[in-house]
Amino acid sequence: MAPGTSSFADFLGAEAPDLLPGRRAVPAGNAGDLAPHGTTIVAATFPGGVVMAGDRRATMGNIIAQRDIQKVFPADEFSVVGIAGTAGLAVEMVRLFQTELEHYEKIEGSTLSMDGKANRLAALIRGNLGLAMQGLAVVPLFAGYDLVADQGRIFSYDVTGGRYEETAFHSVGSGSLFARGSLKKLYRDDLDETGAVTAVVQALYDAADDDSATGGPDITRRIFPVVHVITPAGGRRMPDSEVSVVADAMLASRMQRPDGPAASLT
Image (spheres, rainbow, N blue to C red):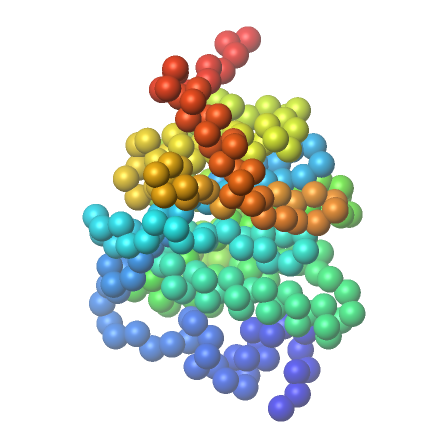
């Protein structure tokens, strides 16, 4: 056995293809209702970085399957990936993607470019197309800081592995329409890090307000969205103590104005 290629997925496909999520045989029929689904992920850029956040709810049909699932993970030092779709397969794909980036770095002695990382994730999604056609789709959102372009970047995907770079902000998952509408109102080019974090938390709240599969801040259980911030210094997950300050302030303001802050008309 020799690693050979710089792609861990290609290496695994040659040596033990049955271990790849997309190569597994699944009985015919729609299996989409058999596993929990992750829902809404949002991301937004700001001068000097990018932020990604995910709610904590997983659902199976009309049942809340889990209240504190994690849907946003670090891919490497300067990028993160958020998952929507079949939760178990999505988490497995994230682990494979993390290994893919680490394997490339060890073989080539350098890190992939931002576009290279986005392309590798697209290839993994494309390999899952057979399962997606049986209802086990995984639709991630990828974001990171491009040290060459000196800016935060966001990439979205479709189930066939189509890769699309987004401008300023984006959202995926069942509550994405409502989250994007909220960000369209709140987003500005001159947001700082705190402003961007507040905007994505507001967007998740608006998504939860209209989409039953998206969970809002759980005040009684003190469960808050997972928020990652990536800057030229690297990525970090904000501790719950910091996210709770943002969420508590937002909820206090929503008590006065349930529809959220007003956007400028000029």
